[in-house]
Length: 405
Image (cartoon, rainbow, N blue to C red):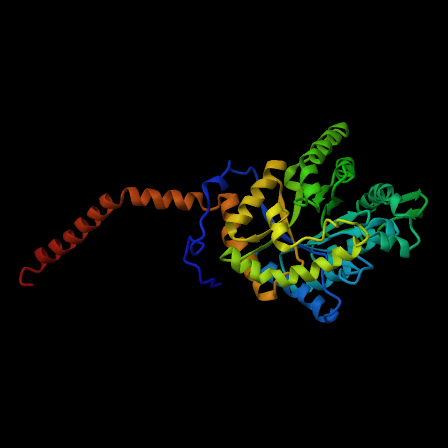
């Protein structure tokens, strides 16, 4: 894959000394989080096709995972069934993990959810991650006649039951929103144990439930002002809750989601993202128009300045990851919201730069190569002289064996 950048350089961009911290205990992975965000003035069929196309590219590039959302109102986030997207993506990819990001547990009977996940796990040959949450759009709950204020309690109930069903148990259980009699998955998953991840934003409930149910954690507001400020506190709460249940929270199972678009220069990245950012912001402002000073009524420059998003260079991406590491050391996966700020070509280029230059720096991938390079340079004169001596020996030997030339 050709980037046009010289080897071991960012074409003028450098890794700052401040970006270099202690070596991680586990390697950071990279993933995409496709809600998605498609403006209502474009063809939805082509938009969904682009989501699958970028998923296929992510698989080819070596990203670890791609997540698909579930939303039912608002006009932008037009994936209503993450399961359908996972099924389609599984046919176009070979190694990347595919997550539901997230299935809104209170909207579905737990047995039906467990059955769909189990089937998908077979269809993908064990590449499913079951992401679950209470639901973020109150409008969705309204259409279903549900009280969104009860969603977190229902998530707690539902995850407990779904875990048992996926484990092959027969479940008889009743609540205000389901009534199961001898319920079981007659097809159990392909994997021995499907990874389950629970969504967390600002409140401590996500981390508390993850600790209770021994699941991974999806921090979906990791760099938003309130979310970033709460990140370390909620992580501490999750760790304390895990101890009460006789277990520990593993940071490698934490995903931190954020917005990043990078290019060779900051100006270039800003130019590529500006128009798409403005289009996406209309969606968020539409939901907060009643607020006198909407937190979403901001410019691209203001968002970058606040540290909430990165639109810049590989150095900027590294610095943002280091900020997150300060909150949750050794968190496992960086998830990038795919908000379609940039065109497909530029989005793919951004992912390539992240994989080629950012992750190797974070994971210290090239430490041994650099050590060997430096070692070779330190002995260059010695080895060069030896090479010259060897060459001369070859000439001398030839002269001795062929005195007449």
